[in-house]
Image 1 (cartoon, helix red, strand yellow):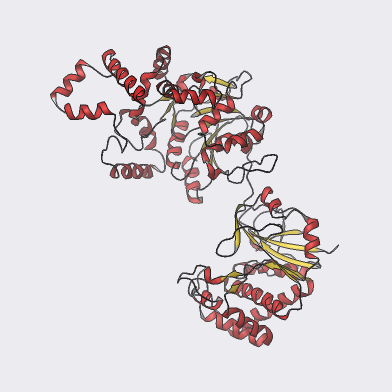
Image 2 (cartoon, helix red, strand yellow):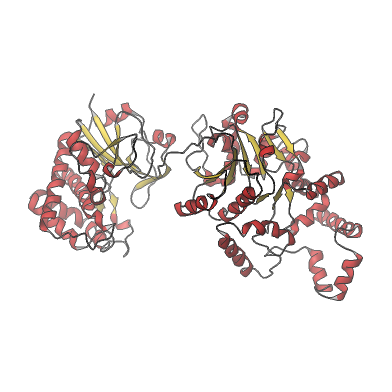
Length: 635
């Protein structure tokens, strides 16, 4: 069997997923600059090397190290996020003629055949070279618009990536080093077929020939003294790296032109995200708390965390995780830094994008389909955790969570409060109640839960609920709260309503609360007296409607959040884009519109009616029931 080595150039500042088999050989590019005392993979800084030239040469330092230090029959090169495909299928491509795949994972490694060592060995052994397919460079972007040839394409990057004079310098030096390759280079640069990115597999003799050609040309260019990096940008420092890439394209073009070699072309796969998933472990004696957030929700999530830390006991340890798929380093670092002064509080960010598990048949659900469904996967994302508390970002906590975290679930899988407002929705609209009985299989719709605050027994969920069922549910178009109710029906310990006191920041609540069965009135009034957590379940939210008196519950904590200014911007944007500052674009009910005409705000007759029929009085509720009874029947 041939000795085949495909060297994968890995960045030292990104912990990328490694393709683990005997053919792929991961190497840290620029390892001489790596401060990791216990690196997991080899570096390009041993033996004969040019590791310290990484910022000028990129992955060529790995190629050079392999050339000088490793023995093989075939030498390959690819990058931590670009690989040659060994799949027997063809996939759609972008304008660079590369297949774009969101994640490098166990599933995609298998999809593109990187784990099939027998097939790779058999295929490679039949050829002198395996390279990526050409790309039509006239379809590619440049800062100055598309260009018709390789030469004009890179000329359009003048002062961006290279200086335009570098192209002619490269061609003239190549002419001097090897006349035949010089001719091929001019043909290649005058055409529109481009092969870049240094991803290839070559027989030993061809690999050595390529490496020697690249070194000779780089030395020749350096000797001219025409490349001065003093006034070049950090991108332009990679000019020598571009020379190596151009030489690779010219070299393969020349091999094809001679017709002497067996060359196989395959698709080039580009992985947008290659970071290895970070599986955390719970802190001893800590309370694990999880949020799902994004760029829009982050200021709101921060507000909820402020309420958490302001109302906890001094000796309670909170281990808080913000799960996301789009936050940048600055947003993450600023949030962590803000909460550092709080004692016994640790903040972690977890990108769940590549952590969604796969079904037994290989099917994998993508978070982009409906990010809120990530809630269903939390026991598998937090695979090392026994318990965790899940919170919505629009929840304000006004108590310590120790008691909640230690609840005896009595053989149930989760603890969550009943959702009395959704119960009212069902009472108001019989179609909703029918849907819950038939589609969600809720024999008793009054047991419909809110996931605004939820204690999850991750161990028991993983044991008793098949992952395949969770994946099947997550593909549904149903709301995530409906899916959670279907999944955990008759497996829920019901929390006291104090854990889900709904604030009336939205007039919709005033409309539907009238349908609450009378037997729950006393229970909810008692919860309102001593709330443990507030929830803002309907739109407009308090950061959209600050005029509601209960919005202050949110804003009292929001003022201390690090992204407070963004919340103000959200609010100002919402107000400026609507005609009515109080309804925020939401249609007022018919009685309210009539009363605004007959009883304008501020008039004596409006104030007199308020005294005769005050809000929530028996007479007020009678008229409200009468209206909604008629309105519902009419619908």
